[in-house]
Image 1 (cartoon, rainbow, N blue to C red):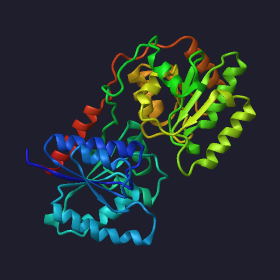
Image 2 (cartoon, rainbow, N blue to C red):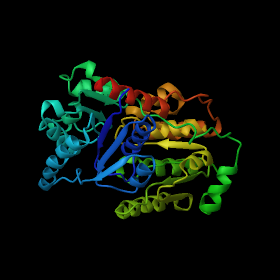
Image 3 (cartoon, helix red, strand yellow):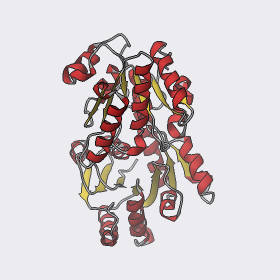
Image 4 (tube, rainbow, N blue to C red):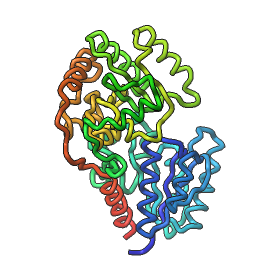
Amino acid sequence: MRRLTVVQLLPALHSGGVERSTLEIASALVAAGHRAIVVSAGGRLVEPLLASGGEHLTLDIGRKSLLTLRHVRSLRNLFAEVGADIVHARSRLPAWLGLYAVRNLPPAQRPHWVTTVHGLNSPGRYSAVMTSGERVICVSNSVRDFVQRHYPGVPAERLQVIPRGVDVAQFPRVARNDRRARLAVAAQHPLLGTDAPLLLLPGRGTRLKGHRHALQLLAGLHAAGMPARLWMPGTREPGRETYVAELEAQARALGVADAVLMTAPTSRIAQAYAASELVLQLSDKAEAFGRTVLEALSVGRPVLGWDHGGVGELLAQLQPSGAVAFHDDAALLARAQHLLQHPPSLPPRIPFTLQAMQRDTLQLYTSLAG
């Protein structure tokens, strides 16, 4: 097998599922003897990318400005200079720039064009670029169904479902009665204590992540005589101050402020899962996949989430008792009480692994490149 040069395009490398998938594929490429190049505006994940053997070119290809169009030439020159075999776009604006750059190359120098639909973006011409790949990777069956519904002109044979995967070595199973993680978390965050059930809602501080539903659920549990605690790591980030203040005001109004902790993202998310009794996934906007579900179940903690999008798809396959009809807050409270009082049996093995995702993506690259 000859050495491939694969260039991945995305806006930045700060945090998030798209960014993590980019690094995971870059690492797999390098491990297989290929060359992995990532183009983005940079961010805190550049360092681990470089440490894995990948390369990074800093271009602000995600900024919505007419000036960004100048990067079409930069990308075209890059693809030609490195002899790119595959260009893989993971976001809309970088995809438009990359597509024009690829098309401006002579046919003999033109790399293969791959896109991944990571999100259920509003259908339209701007989003349609994510279906332009010679191969269009869909991160779940829900995404494939979405693409086929809204872009019926895309040939079915170009769509390939490659689910995101969890690295079970990073998210090892922890017995429910193992209290070490909870003690460690309580030592760092005394408010969480060790004497009450802990609910965990990891996610960025955006309105779409469902923090308000989690606060209402907590208040309902308290009213029912269950003094649970709620930890929401990821809410406190630069630029999110106004939203966090709104959540704090809601917690005070509901009378649960003393039982809620909102923090910056934690680097020990596996420990956070292990410390909790129930993991929440309450995004108002349907998730394309729902990596949180896999991570929590891999650690051995039940999940409670809305039955829509990728989250509903995963729960249906792995833990049906955790799926609740979208925005049915009464059912959410009742199901939370049941799961806390009667922890469900969880799958002994997670079928969606990081290694499977890396293997299938690299096979797609090599099949395209011949």
